[in-house]
Image (cartoon, rainbow, N blue to C red; front, side):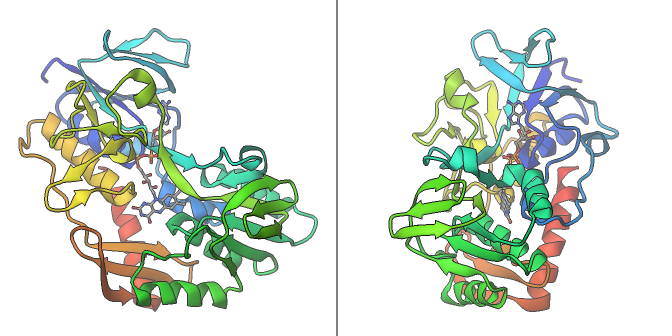
Length: 356
Ligand SMILES: Cc1cc2nc3c(=O)[nH]c(=O)nc-3n(C[C@H](O)[C@H](O)[C@H](O)COP(=O)(O)OP(=O)(O)OC[C@H]3O[C@@H](n4cnc5c(N)ncnc54)[C@H](O)[C@@H]3O)c2cc1C
């Protein structure tokens, strides 16, 4: 052991992948409020009432020198190198901090969204509301990005008696190749999902939403417009980009506080020859694995990454695997049908193995 105290905050893809690797040698404390891994890329399945397969954090950490303190960080004191927690215990000191607090659904400052719309983080409440509704109604999913499409298709397939609508300020799945987007639209149509594009939501109320092109009545509204990083990095005074992601060097160290490594959605990472990395499990997991290897002395090289594909589940019966260039720009090749579904399922399963 190095004798240093390494503290990892956040037990998502990035935080857990880092903690398990560092915990082979050093004394590590992991701080996160949950006992079971969140597996956010499956939250749309949970919202639709599908069974959840999520390991406990204790399972993931088995055999590692990692203590899990089940708490939420309320304050990060970068000068004193201390964290204040909400569990009533003493603040915790660190020599090295791995900051992995991830992101959350953004855009809920639209009037009424915070009160009346469900986000992926509230998947369990949404599932209950649909199950307890006296009669089938309309559910409007706001956001034509990956999360919105996955939520809309999953809900439409699981609840064929409900009318599902997807409402988007841009084109739904507009960043995919023409073949990829055509497949998304075909599956949405097959599942009976009504698509409202170029409609920016301006307010949400108990009986639907208002857009800049008119009103859309809905019994339930699901908000999946975009993601924003956890605010603690900016609040604590780490150097951040205008959107609140921590600025890091090639070894994923904070530019302002090199004793802090930032991984996952919380980090603004630019890879030479690739460009800025987008938020995603696809980038969070390798960043966590990398910092784990770096802090346990198994690499000294800068972080490197290349994109290969993007994948999307479209209900249980369909999927889209879109091949991309190393910089995440679209190729024309896609996988759909059984092959696409199988590839997506294998990738999601591999993510859990990658945590360990
Ligand atoms: C429905 C859905 C589908 C998605 N599908 C895909 C996909 O197919 N491919 C893809 O690449 N990405 C996908 N994403 C995005 C992906 O889930 C995120 O990019 C990913 O979770 C980021 O990982 P992370 O480890 O950085 O943070 P997170 O997974 O957000 O984990 C953050 C951790 O920090 C903890 N935390 C938060 N606040 C505190 C605090 N104050 N104190 C202590 N701990 C705290 C949380 O409890 C959690 O443990 C999807 C997201 C959603 C919602």
